[in-house]
Image (cartoon, rainbow, N blue to C red; front, top):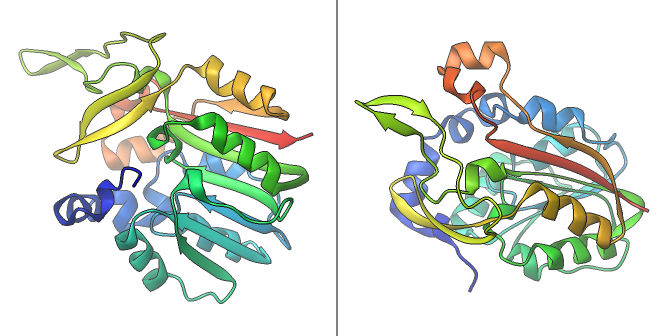
Length: 242
């Protein structure tokens, strides 16, 4: 079984209290940048890898998507997604990202929000995405930024309880990172920006955009995220099947 921390009751309870869980996409600092890089979804067949609460699936349906499939390994996540979604053309399936399969060229768009840094074998995901996408289909995904994931602590350097700087270490040492998230040990996988891009290219994709989103001034003020402007936390990449 792949890592499934979100079915741990205490972990899921902590996650449920996060702003992006209670308020949806409007409290996700990277959402506006992510949204602006999605293609038109009207009439499209869409796959969401690691759908969580299903917020992105709901958005796709609201934009006129013909059919949406959301997959997640967590049954608790899927229960919440089904509870929040009342659209008939959304299907949720319990499955690890690496294990999902469908007919070749059955989707127009694949997106994934903050899930692929939990996947050990990223190349296999891109290989499958290429197979599942129609010609000129689009993959758009966000992950924690390599500057954020490089150091296992994933925290600021403090001096006398005051933030001094963000420590960058072991950037070129890719692989597993055991870090703490929501009070629990979680395994993530660090990769360089070069690896993300070169792997997509080698699997036949054409890069359309590489973005390091920062929250809007309004979000910074509302959420108290002034320090989020001191280093990138997320990376968004959009690519097209040639």
